[in-house]
Image (cartoon, rainbow, N blue to C red; front, side, top):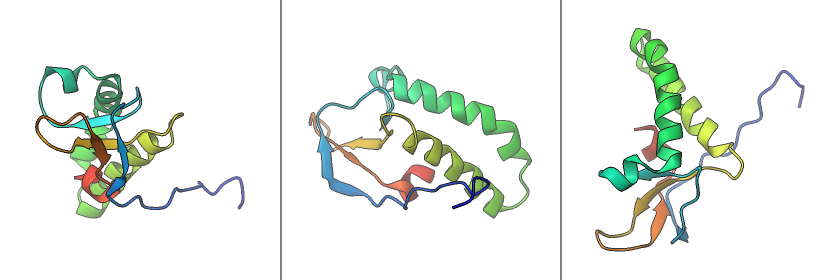
Length: 106
């Protein structure tokens, strides 16, 4: 692979096999509420989204918008440790699972 080509990770499908009870600082937690909003990964994600907001709003085609969203998901996935997009398994559960790239882009 040449140095000009960007290495992409494979599309990550939703996975209950990658369950965790301990989200780390690069994970983006899906849901609502103060605890989720205050999570470091969510703050980092909002900053990335903010940085792309002007470009996204000026995009004329859905394909452009999808590419911008995909780029943000890839940025999260390429962090060290890799970020995940996690959803709680149930309302009162302490277990989280990765929702996958397609859902993360939405």
